[in-house]
Length: 97
Image (cartoon, rainbow, N blue to C red; front, top):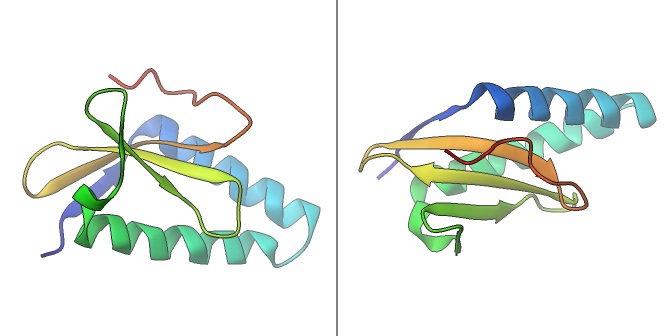
């Protein structure tokens, strides 16, 4: 079963900032980052409960080959909300509400 998902405004900004930063630092790396995040979205959609719980109702997924995590919650049996996409050395901008 595949769930629907959407990005919060904060997660969308964090994601776009990361893509821009990677692409500016080395051409093509931003695209590789996008591909890894897209693959992780598919995994989150198909098996959301396989990721560890953090902060009560939120789950964390690591982006393969990049120091980023995707924080999400399962709003219903069919909907997943991505609340933050952040570098592991930074604090997420989202307040996880």
